[in-house]
Structures are given as structure tokens and as C-alpha cells.
Image (cartoon, rainbow, N blue to C red):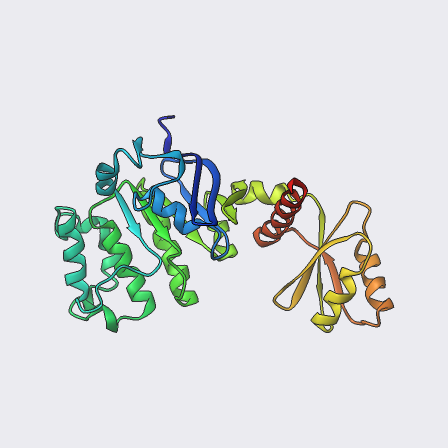
Length: 314
């Protein structure tokens, strides 16, 4: 394994009875990288996390974390990584301080010994150290769970959907905290169903139905988008979507808030052609503009390509 590689995954597969959770997953994560696993619920992100954190065995393939095999060297790996599961593994009947002390004790350390590691985060909730975890807000539980995952000063930090269920302000604060942790040299692997968070990662792997459908930096993935794409706003969304999906040369049409994004083939319609198609359908007053695709547009396109490939294979 390359000395700059923190995590190496080779042809990892995992099934639960008839459900294939992971299908021959392969990629590497570099040391000091903030790496994102992007995909909807059920894509296989948590299963991959559980394999990398030695909580689940792969059916086939291999994986190493900081040069250690996840099957053979599981004991050593557990002492050198931090893991924050999606449900925030906190003891609700213990106080903030008691939760942190418990996690520190499990790793043979103390809050005092590694206080500098968690100071930037813990200082925000330390005033509530005598409050039970059950009485904390979602954002405060998130910060406490992160402190618990960091209290033993891990080399790699795994965060499974850490911003699910917290407010927008807490989400923003959390990613700012991750940037500071990364700057200390910690390798961070974070999974999220929120496509907008992908742009905050150094590199991402897009996962769908247990397979990697896209890999690279957000900018690289966006640069590979193969088609022209337009934003259409105004008018009745339902009618607009229906009209555009019937236009020759339109590959995909999806709603994004108050607008819809329309991807077209090389010989498909431009702004004028799309506007004319809408007027022909009796839809007036729409604003049609060419746009740069976002990560979610790329995910939709890659998902469609993967589905087409799967259908062709069958």
C-alpha cells in the first residue's frame, strides 16, 4: 500500500440474505483527506463504514485502515480510529461530562490528557457538562458525539451521516469543525445523503445500490458531466415537467426547489427551443437559462447511466 494511503478498499462485497449491500467496491482514501461517501439512504454507506470500523466482516474482498487489515488487525484498528455512528452513540441517562469520561476510559485515556484535541468543540458545550444527554438539543448531541469520537486522539475519524436530523446552522458549524480537525492531519471519512455537503469534501465516492458510480473531487465529477443543462423557472412546476419530458432531445428533467433542471443531448434544444416547446404546450412566462451542473445533477445522470448499464447487462 502507498505510504500516502490511509484506507485501501479492494473488491469488497457484502450481502444480507438476498440483499446485496455492497458490490465489488474498490477505491483508496489518502492520508489527511476529508473524504465523502455520497448517496441516498440504503445505498450501502453504513455497511461500508461498519466494515472499515471492524464491526462487520466483508463477504469477499479486502480492506486496510492505516495499513492494518480490517479482519486480521481489528483490535489495533479500533484503538486508532474514531467512529461516530448515525444515531449518536450517547448514553442518554449520563451527563455530558460522564459520557465523555466513559468514552475516554474505554480507550485508556482521560479528558485532561487529550483536552487540547477536543477543546475547540467541547468548549462550546462544557457549560452544560452536568446536563444529561437526553436533555440536549440535536446540535449539542452532535458536538458531544464528536468529542467522544475524538477524545482518544484518533488517526482516522469515521462519521456516519453526522448532520442528519440537525438544523441548518448546526450543519454549517459542524463542517467548519471538520475543517479544523482535518487541518490537524486527521483523515476524515464522512457519509451524507445531502448532496450540497459533497462540495465541502476533498474527494467523494458516489454510491448507489452498493456500487460506486462516481469517484473524484467535486470539481472533477462536475467537469465530467456530458450534456448541456438548463434551469427552467416560473410557471406551474407539474405542467412544466410534463411538457419538457415529452420534448425530443431532453434526457432528464428534475425539480430542484422552485426550478427544474433539464439536460439535453448534443443535438437537443437550446434555451430558445425549450421556451418554444413550453409555449406550444400553453405554458407562458418561464425563464430558461443554461447553467453549470451541480453535484446532484451529476448524481442523477450517473444513476441513470448505471441503471441503463444494469438493464443492458440483464
